[in-house]
Each structure stands twice: as structure tokens, then as C-alpha cells.
Image (cartoon, rainbow, N blue to C red; front, side, top):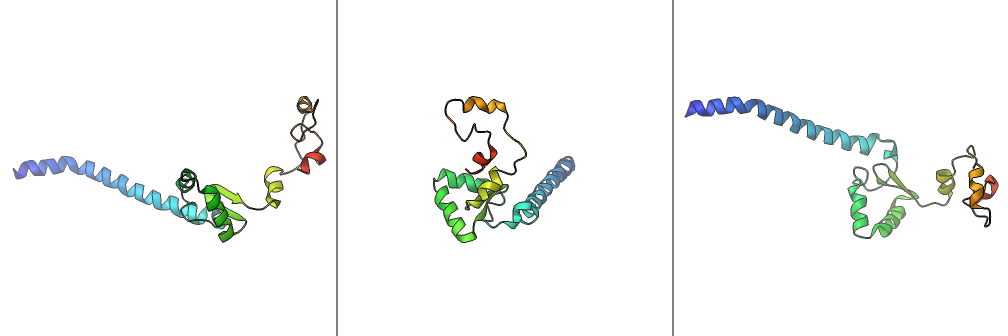
Length: 136
């Protein structure tokens, strides 16, 4: 009986070692991941809920409860104009950020392709005049 137990443990020992190795590796990688996104990531300088800096599940929960707009408004009141709402996401509450986000520079003019969109009705999307489209 003892010999059967010893032989069983001897055959299971390598599997136990492999399982323990991957378990420890998984726990360590979770801590490294959390430390990186909380303290070393380029967006870690922006304030926000700590859980939001680690996972998008926080944002998914807020969307599923339909309270995301109210929550974002409260976060902006608490933290300021820029709030981190995900590991790689920021929320801006300032109209001055629109130009910096959506109009990074004037180095890429629109081509003649856009003439078809303004042939009968001039609009912001089709205009090729940078001064006109930059005002909006």
C-alpha cells in the first residue's frame, strides 16, 4: 500500500512542479502588469479611478449600468479636465483639447477627391480650404 502511494507521488511530482511553476508565474505576471499600468505607463500621470487604470472592465460596467455620462461628469469634477478612464484611454472636459486631438497640424491637405462632396452644397467635410475647416 505504501509502495503504491510512493510510486503515485513520484509520478505526480513532475506535474505538481509544472503546475506550481505556472501558478507562480501567473501571479507574478499579474503583479507586474498591475504595477506597470499603475505606475510606469505613460498615462499613469493622469488621475482617475485606480481600477480604470488596470482594466477596461470598469468602463464596461459603467456602460452596462447606463451611468457612464454621470460617472464621467463626477470624475471630471473630482480630478479635473483630463481623467484616465481606461488603461489606454483618457477623457477630456475642455474645448481647448479638441484642436490638439483632432487637428494635429496643417501638413496634410485634402486632395481633389473631396470636390465631389462640395459640388452642390459646401460643407465642412468636403472643403479644402484649411482656414475654413480649422475654425470648426
